[in-house]
Length: 188
Image 1 (tube, helix red, strand yellow):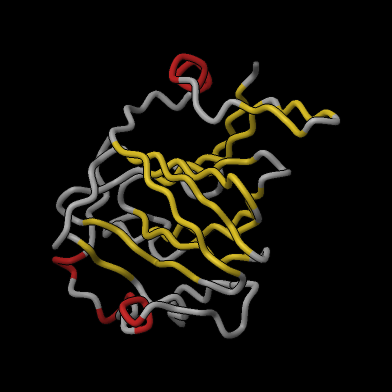
Image 2: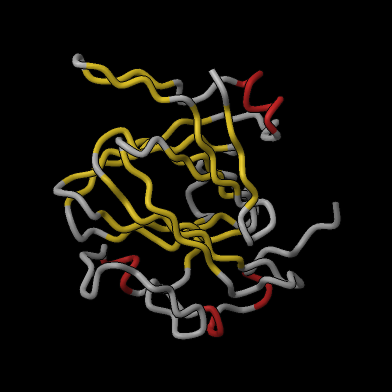
């Protein structure tokens, strides 16, 4: 099986495609194979798998952890989402820029979002089951976020009036977040 990784216009955010084998019974696809992914350029250790199920119009995000940042490998197991990564790293030449990718159970794409980015998605199908492989554990109390409708980011979400949690509806804009609450671009 082949793994094809493409760097997006945001350094570190990776679009991933793997072989997909449909037939009359359904399909088969590998979701992660550490050796193949490392050989293709994504050599990361994942320590937690998370799962969400959401209905059409739900928008989750834009979330990040500051002291225990998480890289995330997103896969849609059922349905379709519009997945967004927003660069919020202080000192980054792409600070405030975003990328959006449609992920579905039929297109076989994945998105890797590295530490230092805020992440969110909206559901385009009736329901969507989403699996996240995380490079760090979820840490209660280390939860931050950026408002989905931040005018500075101007994300072109494909939903006009999303269904939001009360927490997500109250998130601040990027300009209202104190610098100390944003990650710093780390030298490589």
